[in-house]
Length: 373
Image 1 (tube, rainbow, N blue to C red):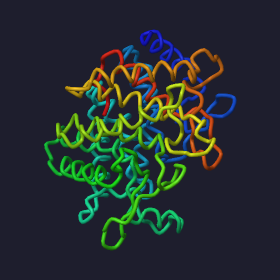
Image 2: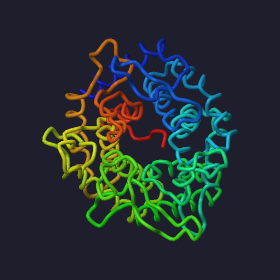
Image 3: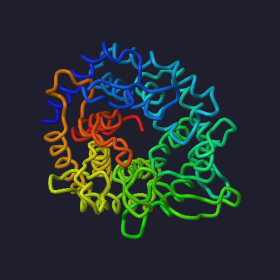
Image 4: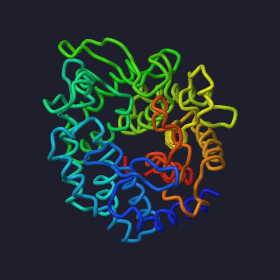
């Protein structure tokens, strides 16, 4: 089944190159076409990741050519200080690092290392965390308020770029920063019951911890499922690089929490702790990321691996049944029912990160785990 789905995904990617061109999908429209990213937007790497995965699976040069045609976007990002933030891992692991791992392209290697250096530079020495966004005079006041001492759960995913840079160069500071931030994130973003905060705030002057908050979840005390999914997948990669029990244990706790809070259809509600009827809203992107994370964890966990792999398979099947667009000829993406920002009313759309992780999950469930992170 997974092989057929992977074939269908590659066909869909191939068919839609003519419509997407060299743009980077941001969010889908109701007619299943795409809106595209503005310069530097954090989701720009996911469609590129799909292209590199298609190249990896087929060897067809046209997919690599399409991915590389976007390099001006990524190079420009690194030349604009206001565009640099904690999401450089999302952007460059699935573009430059993927290219280098698959082809040995030295230009891509240098681009990936430049991104890793920029990410490392955002590390706050006293608080031992990577600041989410830069403080700049051109940012809006609210943006600066959020940037001053802010860590996001998404950052678990971005650590792979630093760990890769450490392995590639032998420079220990990449590793040390990634490990220190990961320890801080485990300490403050994961609650005792296995639920998670979306963000955590630190005093901008002293970097002392203040409190956990949400930006996209139901409330500060709820558990936004996409953020929770980032953590499962990211912690699995962090454990793969460090082999430290702390990160394996954290990934297990979060995986178990997610599996205990799926809805009756075996899918991720947009927020695991939404007490209202809004809990019926699903997020296909959270499902896809969780599925890929469970599959990755299943391959790494020496004790519970088979259970997580089985859970990933079940979630993948439920996701495919409910949300797949592979049989929708006009669809430029792969999954429907992505909950982009529920509290703003954006509850159903194609999302490029959902699409990428759907493909990654399918590949992992075929037993291939040597990917781009």
